[in-house]
Length: 182
Image 1 (tube, rainbow, N blue to C red):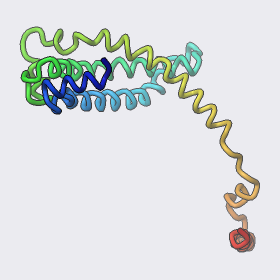
Image 2: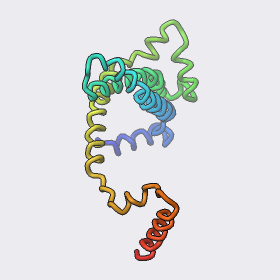
Image 3: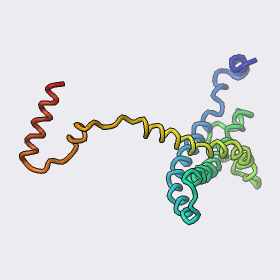
Image 4: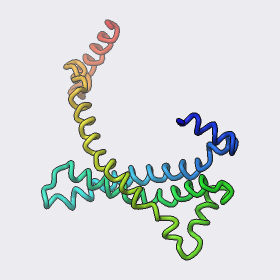
């Protein structure tokens, strides 16, 4: 009773199309969520850092606050699409496409409950994960920074601007010689 047998039951009952039921809202939802999350995270980092500068908060705390705030907004944008996906999976005949499913969600007097009823569980799932994200990215960045190969003295000299036309002629000649010796 694993994923393969579940897929076989879905294909036998609904056809191969049943496996893709809800794929539209899923792809659109996570595209929107990811775009909002990463864009807002980058935008919020300097704002949160400026607000926390008087408190002398550690950099990690600033990054965590920016990440969680970005995740809250992104998850709020994701929530109606997740609700549309769940409705499409539960009742495939309810709507033909994602836009129709969203339109149905936002119609009627209780549209907030239908569109955003799952926001609490989504936030409880996503925000703790996102809170650990800056710490991981700081560790990875630290590893990259310290494990990067150091530039050789010759490569540093070749990056310096020549001070006179004669030294320019010499440096290009020495570079040509160095290239031909390789």
